[in-house]
Length: 368
Image 1 (cartoon, rainbow, N blue to C red):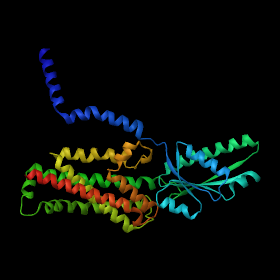
Image 2: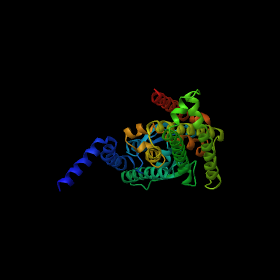
Image 3: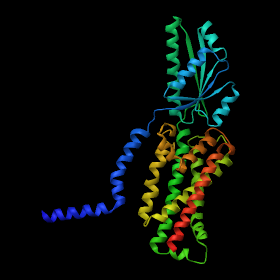
Image 4: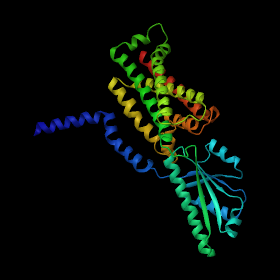
């Protein structure tokens, strides 16, 4: 029994001295319960709404106040013409536009019937169904209130219009997300494993101290994988368009440019992983499992980012897939061009520079 206790004590010492293992054992359950308990929800909250009011009157003002008071919506803009609707969606300022017909209050008072059009961004069909349903409930509640006050059978008819995906095809939502996840996982895994393989064989240091500059050595390792990743991108796009029937309604050139940039970011991320990993198994775990969970949960691929607590919304900004998925939706689904994805391009370019700079510094430190 004494021997057993001594061996148990020894194993405790080994575990306690292994700080990475302790971090995984103790912090992983905390992170998972926070993510799945608070951050990851299909419930729609704080949806950005623009309200089209041709003429200000008491009825439109009261309904707008009800919308803004709801936990599900945040009125971000009041517009006054139909031309502003497309601009609102194009700029990403709102996910839903509530459009009152001209003379809304007068028609409701004299005819007993008035119409409201709900124009939703349906690039995410599930979210669009949710927030249009919540909006219809708010309108119904107001209708019942005024019927009780004035004892008249008032009827407010909401008409729902889904933009960009009127058939509510789910592939329109998951294709950009899957494209972003596949590219970053494959690219990061390929470069991290390839370079770690050289380190395990003892040839990486020989390459880096050769007469050729280290940056050229690294670029020579990345280039073949960049070409292979471009082939993967082409295959995925062809399957999306011809098999899944997801059209590229925007600029194809813009989609190609942002995809090439994203591939380079993913390869640079794999290069950074290779500077920390000491074995191919470790590199595969970090680039595979380590990237899959953040990409799936915090990139907007499955769960709307605006529904998450602000710390996770902030953290999602450092995930390259978030910006790429957003750019792909703007180009493929919403039919926009290069000018609409300048922000996403700038963020991905900055990430590429930072990742390459850190990776190169780590390699130079190893040689010293």
